[in-house]
Structure formats: C-alpha cells, structure tokens
Image 1 (cartoon, rainbow, N blue to C red):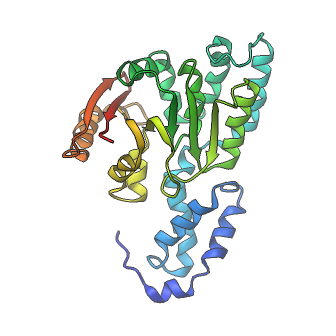
Image 2: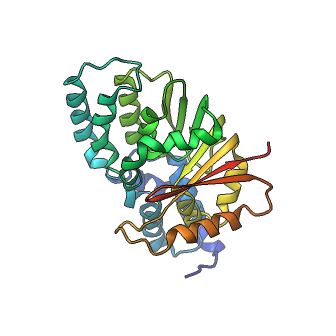
Amino acid sequence: MLHRVNKKIMEKVDKKLIVDTILVSAKYRGIYRPTVERIVNELVGRYPVKDLEKAVRNKMHQVWGAYAKRKNLVKHSQTFQTCTNNYKLSKNNIENSAIKYCLLPVLKLQTSTDERINILDEYYKKIFEITGKPKIVFEPACGLNALTYFWMGEGVKYVGYDVDQRQIDFVNQIFVDCGVENRARVMLGDIFEEKYIEADITMFLKVLILLERQKKGSSLNMIQKCKSKYVVVSFPTRTISGKKKKMREYYKKYFMELIDGQGWKVEIIDFENEVVFVVEKIL
C-alpha cells in the first residue's frame, strides 16, 4: 500500500523521540543510530503520527530483526572460547582447522551463513580463481559472514560494516582471540550512509534483495559505488523453508537485467544453494 507524504504530519513528528524510544528497546539497543534515523526519515509523513513508530519497527524487523539472533551471542561467545581452549591454537594462523570447527555453531546463528557452511571450503577458492588472491576484501553489510574470513586464506585483509554494535563487538572479539585483529575487523556503518573503502573485492552476499526492500532501485547504485575492480554478488537458490521455486533461474535473469548496459564482465558460479556473480568492473 502506497502512502502519500503529508507535510503537516512531518512538521508535527518528534523524530528524535521516536529514534530514542526504539534504541532503548531490548531488541534494537545498540543498532547504529543513523540507520534508525534514516528509516524514520523515509517513513515520516507516510503514516499518521500514532502509527509511525510501529511502521519504523516493522521496517527494521523486515530488513534486520527477522534475521538476527542476538540473544545467543553471549552464549556462543563462551562456547567458542571453551572450544578453542580445548585445542592448542596457533594465533595468527587463520588456516587453523580448530578455529573453523569452533566457529561452525556461531555461523548457524544466521540463515545466510548457516546455508553457506557446507560450501565454505570451496566458496572463496572458486571466487579467487576468477579474481586472483585479493589483498583487501570489503563487505558493507557483513553480519556474521565476517567470520568466514578464516576460510579466505593467508594474506587477505578484511573490513566489514554492520549496523549492530553488539554483533560487531562479538565478531571483533573473536578476531582478537584468534590474533588476527590487525588483519580483520568490522566497523559500525550503514550500507546506504557510509563511504566505501578501496578494496580488491567488494561483496554483497544475499543482501541486494534486502536493499531493494529498503530503497527500490538501490542495488545498481550500490554496485556502481564500489571502489573495487571486482564485486561479488550472491543470491539464495532456496527459500528459508528449503523450497527451490526456480529461484536460481529467477535471480540469474534478474541480476543480468539489472546490470545490462554497464559494460561489465560477469562470471557465474553455481553452488548447491547459492548462485554467485563475480563482476569485473571497468574502473
């Protein structure tokens, strides 16, 4: 349902109060303030004042809350430390199989990374066969996928943005525990608001559809915004319930039409439950 912008409503709304109220709630405490402000600004005037806060919460749940399992972070942080303590870990060695083993329960906390677990051993190998081994990988909406850094191999530096401070602290503490904090880190940042860093590869893994739900037509702009030779974009090939519904064919058609006319070279990697597009841009 479309809502017309009502300028009179916009003048009456206390946007700061709505943002403050949302950020003190248990569910959204620690979320990047500019993200909440952006969503409020996008929706103000489209709903009556009494319905605006609910609309903002619904939007945030749609694009973030439905995929987050924050309450398990503390538990899994302790589990990870216990697990790694049971092994003789060599810090600064990201190839350590014990670290990967101990991370598997953590990666299961988000649907996107959970679905990627069975293909991780081949995932970045196949991507890097096309791009070459990168020096810097940037992921502007990383979530827990930042922890798949340990599958990228030696010599790679990783930077991610995320809007959830508690999740960021969780991920960065694991990087510290494993002695790779100088090579991998996640920072607080909104994919729509921040400047992108220069990198060899920028990754948008299963996030373009979420971007479209927030801002229609934003996907192509995000790719154009990248300061990297290669952009890696992926889509799921199954629904959360496991049904295929010809999603692979749909997303291949959707993405190729999205970038049509850009003059970019594209190679496609078909994994069992994820289709990956490796885009070589003309910088």
